Length: 339
Ligand code: NAD
Ligand code: DAU
Image (cartoon, rainbow, N blue to C red; front, side, top):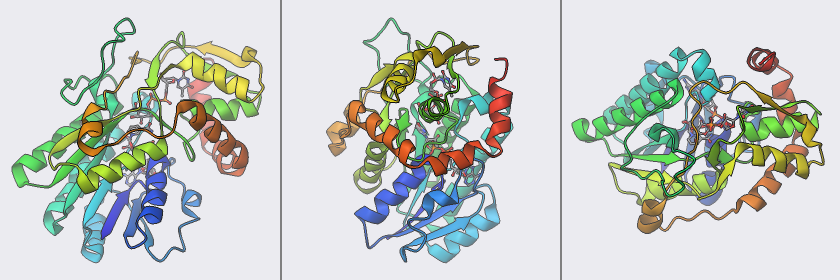
């Protein structure tokens, strides 16, 4: 079995590569990644020498490179994690989101049609459903909730989802789609809420909370997401969408306070800054379908996962310090100075 994992040098993709190599010692795992600002080869150093692993630096929009790789590898399964993933960056510069997230998906699926795969899996997001109001805790996203996007990022992901379903219906491509809630865990890029707050706390820097900090996200430990995708690609039904989430809704401000407490830092570091444009209020996934059909349930409770995650950032300072000392400094200045 050969599986191509795109975006495998990023946060969730790398965790998925580790999961697959350890769970299936007879699988060949090929990682295709452009190594954008969010991709980091050092993340994969522990598997580079594994004979079942191959890394290829390429852009999923580069038709020639993608087709060449498919010609060489003849993959059975393709799992597409490659994407521009940060909402704030999509608000600053939507173009690259449309290119990678939509056209890159098209290129990969064209190669899948040409070379024949048993499964093309699209890693999507709960953000395609838009948001829910804070005063309706009874509402959740199901797979039939209408698509209703807020940011250029979520619009690009929703477009890709529609294209994936179109390739299934029109060309008979055996596809599946998963829509997951917010992940956290090792190798999470420090531009995102949890790692940003951990890094800033450790550096005694202000903790920039957008708006009033009352926005709610539904947090899932990354390993649980990887296990869900593993189940879907092996046992999930072709042409189906599966929501993934752990019923773990938290307000942003409560996450930031929890991180301060865990690192023994004063809450006076918390600084309220201008809100994100179009900021989604609440995400909440109903994972009944994946539970009933595939038996998936989250295994890591947030109270344990967040402790493990904070400890990982304490133990791997070199990984994130190298990132935040490079080009990231310009990004941080642009996004947060005088905000
Ligand atoms: P990430 O930004 O950490 O990693 C993205 C990876 O894709 C990087 O390694 C980057 O180099 C690579 N990449 C970007 N453009 C590429 C291109 N044109 N060609 C090849 N590789 C390219 O992202 P993540 O948080 O790991 O998210 C992975 C996927 O999961 C994305 O599709 C995202 O939409 C989805 N998702 C993320 C979350 C979350 O909480 N992080 C939740 C649900 C869904
Ligand atoms: O729900 C799934 C999505 O989760 C994925 O599709 C995205 O790829 C992923 O980036 C994530 O999107 P969010 O926008 O929810 O994550 P982010 O970490 O950027 O922000 C989480 C919340 O924290 C959000 O309400 C904005 C807020 N925030 C974020 C940052 C970076 C702050 O208050 N301050 C910050 O500095």
